[in-house]
Image 1 (cartoon, rainbow, N blue to C red):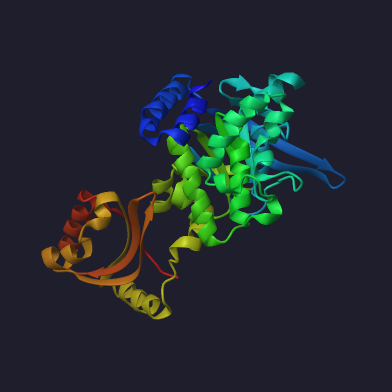
Image 2: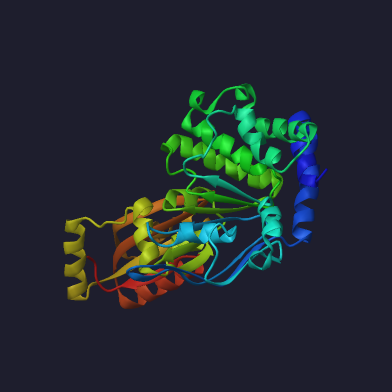
Length: 378
């Protein structure tokens, strides 16, 4: 029995002992350095109109045990990328390594075996309507020739893990959309994968159900130490669950980093556009007019304050007034959280003596704020 199987079984019958077992499982996974390594990966589709370059020289290193997000608008190439990870799409060039194994170098039988270690959950569930909840989860094990008693030993704890123990004998038509996705997640875990791929797994669900599915994935990541690669077009999904994120546009990765850093300090127009869905950074028209008048007169400066962590909880604006005698006009602001860590962006018009403005700027920097001097507003 693998450490992951043991963790699942103990989790079902003795929650008090699961923490130690899972810690051992995570340590074993880290010792084997299980990652997804993508190097110079490209994918070209040829048709009557010519070549379509869906992916262009992708380089990604996905670490063991992390939840890694891949985000982009429709047509950015993210779905093609995730299908290249398990070679459902074969790259035109480049390599994909999972657990140190170059998948493109494997013979067909070896590739089929390797794919059992790469679970996948889908946007539209892909369940078999003629099979029960239990039967859908058991299906990949049956295809692999797993003995019946072993199937039972694996499936029952998975039903507990995804909260479907009471629905084992129902059919897909008898359960909700969120429950269907839980079946899909359990089915993807049945082969005890080292990597779980999620292909827009929540985009067909309502917001409340989406949050519950993301919480489940986060719980699975924490309990099993499982590496999760998640593609989405929704920044809210990345915000809730991902440790790091890659932003795609036109078949290329245009930005990559820790999720908090990408949210707090986006480096590309593509990322800033995606963030508009969650940050709502529009500046009111009257505030724009007021700021333009001040900037034109030379009487003030316009600062964008990007703050996160402890800095987001400090009274930075009030200190500008109290300690430096500045006049502060807040034009736009947003405070939120990424995986429990606060971050924010504030657009402020500040007026005062030049030396007081310089001192205030140094003060803000010393308290962890990242300041962007803005020369105009739109």
